[in-house]
Length: 597
Image (tube, rainbow, N blue to C red; front, side):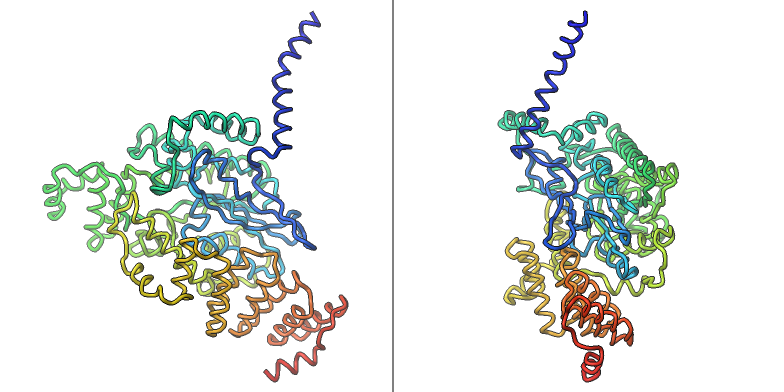
């Protein structure tokens, strides 16, 4: 009897042993993808850093030519006592589409917090990826928890239907959350990747892979292009979001990690519904609309285009009525690229359920919009904020962090009026964003009439000038020039033209990309000195001296302190350099030099 039991146990264990051996061999052979969220970045003579795995998106976009963007934010592998660490979760708005770089609210937030707390190491790590939804949020949560965050910010909801693995997505396994979560867990195994790759190779001849080459990511991702309000697929998407977000919040709660949730924002005023049923008896509807008969409003209750027509009709007549019907038009839009209000209601509901802080971003945007209706003043298209919109988001989270008292001593608090004058986005990146949006609006599901010809003609008129901002932005957009090279040229160009503010924007943008390199802080400090902002110069020179302590960095820091009439701080900087064996100028010599200049 015992032998039979042992034999059965051996028989059962053999497949698992084979899988274990195969898994080990595949890992040794470096087969497949490593889906760890963060990878180590070794830097000579400096602490190790971590950065988000650039191939992470492949986990959610398997066997396709789709490209999902993400930011690369370095942070210390070993968290220090002076570090305040924030992780931001979401999709393309979080990544900063279409501006990226310093045009994302997480980087704007980091910039402002760093200036507010100059003695702290502020880390704001962007884990957003384009075209993902709540399945990805949940999948990344455990890896984020391992990095000991002081705060997590979540802004997500627009991609719930068409994002990777969503109920209406072309990359989906249906409305089976348990199966999808299990699938994502198995994807970490190289053995499973081998099985999946083999399957796709065999099946590749019988189906066409999704591709962006002849269309846009939006069209490729949208399988169920029409999802009626309150339909089965619609309700599945809402439940998918709530269940996944509930699991995310539960995990953070168990580890006592503060979370800030945010409602999501849509462009309701200036985006015609993408797909709508035809308006029955269009002439009669238009007549009823002009005469303000109740029949027009009745039709609008279930027709997106009719509702939008009513909304625009009342824009200058009755703000509340206009707002009501423009919102209804978004809700009735059959192509659900804009999150329905049920998503925001779910966010508010879960915020209360888990006692989680909430930023009502939708209301904030409405307060900064004409007639309280969000439109092109703050949005680039249907859901992505423009530079000012991204700033509003950063401002809201900045003040929420203050309200929650997650950091002490806000003596250097930066008010809205001052912060909006110091948005760390280069002119080139701003133009690059416009180019991206113009290209997007020329394709499905937008009408080509949305395009502003003015921007394109401006570009064409400046093509002859090799180093103009527009030409460099276009070169980056067409992959003719690398972004780093364009920034280096622009910095020198601005400095030569004595346009020090724009040169500072370039330097501050480079700091986001290379936070461990002293040179970028030197560049920023130099421009601050030329502008006459000595306090900010001292901040950047302090970082320059921290990463590269040498004669130059020590003397520049001391000079900034002298300009601020902080002679004791200047003396400390020079004394520290002398103790470390650096042959620096005396305080008297630097004071004399500063006085002469």
